[in-house]
Amino acid sequence: MAGKSNARAVFAAADHDHDHCIDSALDAASGLCARRGARLTAQRRRVLALVWRSHAPQGAYAILATLHRDGHPAAPPTVYRALDFLLAQGLIHRIESLNAFVGCPTPDTPHPGHFLICDGCGAAAEVNDRRIGAAIRRSAGDVGFRIERQTIELRGLCPECQGTGQEPAHGD
Amino acid sequence: MAGKSNARAVFAAADHDHDHCIDSALDAASGLCARRGARLTAQRRRVLALVWRSHAPQGAYAILATLHRDGHPAAPPTVYRALDFLLAQGLIHRIESLNAFVGCPTPDTPHPGHFLICDGCGAAAEVNDRRIGAAIRRSAGDVGFRIERQTIELRGLCPECQGTGQEPAHGD
DNA sequence: CGTCTGAAGGTTATATTATAACATTACAAT
DNA sequence: ATTGTAATGTTATAATATAACCTTCAGACG
Ligand SMILES: [Zn+2]
Ligand SMILES: [Zn+2]
Ligand SMILES: [Zn+2]
Ligand SMILES: [Zn+2]
Image (cartoon, rainbow over all chains, first blue to last red; front, top):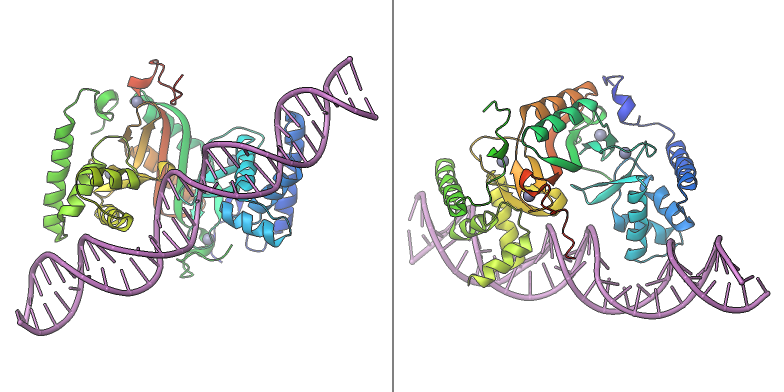
């Protein structure tokens, strides 16, 4: 309970209304795709909802299994194609160190994805800290490297999971 | 060590003596394992040499195939076990965004692996910039996140590959 | 309306990456 | 030699991802 108040800004509180997260993500996606002329089909919308099922990144095959449970059977290519579309639209990010996908809370503006990922509760928080970006640009600039894409994934324990002996991952 | 424009210091020159890279990596590994009482067996040494085959990260199955070509047939678990040992000793790093492994040029001292990875030539350069580390610690500290492990992989083009038409491989 | 077209999705098979489980061998210490 | 343990071998399979080809569907247009 001795968490910092800032912490809640990036990691959702344990008791937050997650249905609201899902709904607003879907609404944002609808609007954004409409403005861009991109087709957010029922299939893609379902996959996006399942990625947002939790703040913990979801694997493609977990999404696949949930689709089956929900009465929408699909094969791997279907899921991967939907994920590719969502990635292209910036609606989700891929977490390389987990081979999994997580919803983007700010899909309207382009940004590198910088993540804090808790090994206790599994949640991934997108931070996109200006200072990290600046340090990276400076470091790459020093050696003449031109950055096209960033993978920044910091693993550890979120404030809630520290001191609770919560090292191993759990469900979702 | 505190450098500004040691531009070519991180990416090896195109014409450098790579056999020297391999030899000194193997020598360093021998000494380090001896001091630690860790057993750098022939198998592990062979795998380490193959990881160092290039400054481009090598996949486990590429290593496996090369072992076969070299007359040292092996099954996947053999290679993965050797890689696990080398990772545990800090002799190599895993590149998450490539599912591949690259030799560590400074295995003596513990450090997070921060990489610049060229999409032109495939080379990965380990930078471990103190400013990036500091920015990350500050950013995580702000929200009370405890970092246990970092994945920092910056993809783009190295100085040599810029302007040489060497964008991500296309063929024609 | 009917037809055309291209994107989306379906289907099957397979590629790629990684690990589980158990048997055998090598090796150092007693 | 005996024994305990680390390393390796062996077989099978899990988990992640894509290739290739076919069908369906929504919208454009005459
Ligand atoms: Zn984002
Ligand atoms: Zn947590
Ligand atoms: Zn290193
Ligand atoms: Zn290059």
